[in-house]
Amino acid sequence: MAPVNLEQLFEKDFPLANNIILTVTEVPDCEEQLLKLFERAMLRGFDNHARLTQIQLPMERFPDLDSKFWHIPIEDCGAAQVLRFFFETPQTQAH
Image (tube, rainbow, N blue to C red):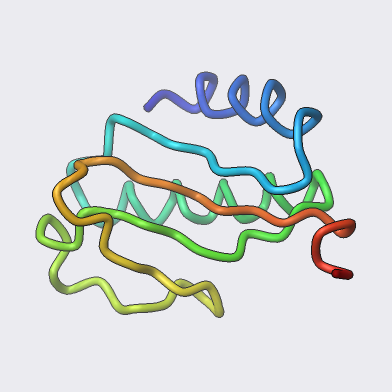
């Protein structure tokens, strides 16, 4: 997914809800690109006061990837060949 597209999705999704799930349907081909996308998502969430709390991805494509990115758990999305970022805003973190 092009950087501009990801930024547009964040701009569109963040004002809509307290919990945000951002789904990326074009998963990067290499682990290096994937980690850069993780970093951008984490930083973009931070900029919008929404903490990245979980990542789901097709683990069969990235078997050497650890179960955590920094402190964020990474889980397998199973058969779905998508990448999902789960965010919480301060309102939902307090409950």
